[in-house]
Length: 500
Ligand code: GLU
View (tube, rainbow, N blue to C red):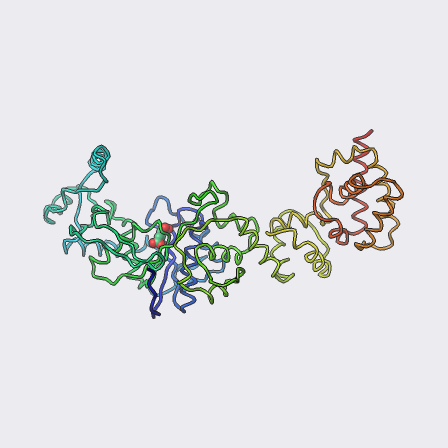
């Protein structure tokens, strides 16, 4: 049974990425659910950087992740500035690597109250324990002989130069931990599920569970939404909260995102990083719309949402514990819908960098653009696909594709191309209307006595450089007569070269 949440004051949530790689789509979904909840409830969204893995974390990844979040439209109330990385907010620093003394202080507090201890087990000794457990087919748990040694003895050893980790003393009581999860209802963890786990490594750096619990408490986080993969961590974090006597935040463990083969979404399934979708020309609003619907049910027929509509419609009751499938076709469909809803000027603004990159040039006329987008908007669902369609309209682009070869070798092609050229030469205006084009095809058919694909494919090739592709009626009015003449003459040259 899922519990109804009483409206709560002082809502503070956090997204806590580790800057050890690019921002993953799963991470974006986690950030999104936290953000929607916070903003819907007029709460605070904190961005905290979990960078205590000093070897794998770096500022390049951090800036890239913050840049992607900003591109998506997230505005964090507290956390590092996306460019300068300067902290904003009164619970900082927001990078865990700058909070190390805090964790060390709290670890000392647990040691003093006998809830944690110094452990001198070596990696080798732990390896032997693991092997023994494996051989006896028992679950592995660290049983440290140092658990009940005195603090004085431990301090002596440290003084002698021995290195120690700080381990949490998992209570030896026979009680199960019960989590009232916002998404999954009651989750029961047997207390013997975990052995004494590490809080601080011998280097003094905290492990994730410790720094996370300390920060969720000290940053006054009220709700934590994260992937269900973290459930076992949550048990450890609950134990840490209990040891300090701190009130627990509310947790909601989001369902996994699966690939279409129902395995956990990974690189094997294609693009998984936000940056790759950005490069391919997906719109931020469409990505967020798509990810929100994965694991959250708006309980209406509406499927297309702007970011602010998502914020307004969000409710925890719609969060779904069953896994979401990353359905790329659905993403394309949603992206296409968002593209079609955009104003022509906005759409063009988004396309321009792609055109520039590809060296494509177009008429500078807003009426032309209006018509181009109206005629072609059903042929693409991403900016990347749009570029591939608009390419055919660019004055600076004409490429004869390999598939044209067969068409150029047909004996009747030369007379069709000649007649098409004749029509273009005699047409009195630069812009050819769809009606004039239909009439021209009929006239060419009559004159050359060529019909069907033998007629249409050479004309199509003379316009697009290939016998397949977009509907000619939609593109002819968008390419000037002068450019069409240039194209047919290039094709004629290739044809005579091939057939001579
Ligand atoms: N840094 C953790 C991660 O990236 C955060 C998990 C959490 O939200 O507690 O998975």
